[in-house]
Image: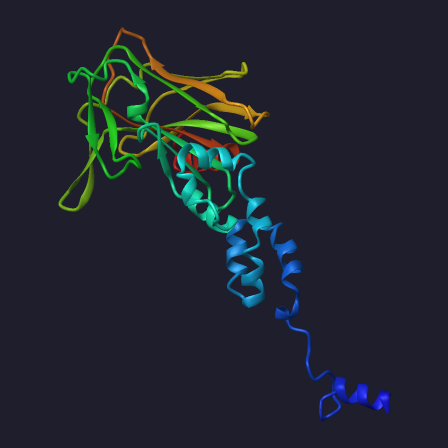
Length: 294
């Protein structure tokens, strides 16, 4: 009788097989969460739309805490109002940190790359030390929608070109790349179309611009190149640095110079300096090469 009952339970009315097959939604949420932890955030979000089990599993705190930088609490303390993140699920903390957050008087921003969770930083032109910036004969700050800071420094003409920057932060562990975002020419909109004024562009094809980077723990990097590709924003790579001790403050100093005073140079827009995880930096370099840029 027991055997007959078992058979009746397992077979459908036609005797052709199981009456209730295992479904994807029958997998325990705890097991799904362990699998999701090994995926990138975009894939987790896609799978969360499959069914209730995946949606519930995708919200597990331990998944999203593994995607956050090891020192995310420091970032929250420095640039976020802690009261806004207390009590939030780690998924919501991650989402909030993927939005740009200004600090240091709005001259810097930090955010997480939504695909990798890597910490990214930007320093506006107003957060840099630019030789001659207060002399309107040489430089002007102009408003533009093409900058995340809504303003760039525009060089009309100068003999001694020098820009310096400093930045101190508890960087998460990893390798980072530093870039300057620059454009030859001044862009604007005319009749709804983007146009670029190249009137003041000169001097950048005579001698290369030199880039330098140093860190408080003794790392150094240097590079040089000619500025080109008028009318397009280009990320110029300064160099890379490695963070081994994420719980300690690291200061980076960086510069861009062209100080050969045998000729003037001008017609350059300076947007900002950017610090990206090197994996993202490599992608930027690939895109530059595809576009015929540096």
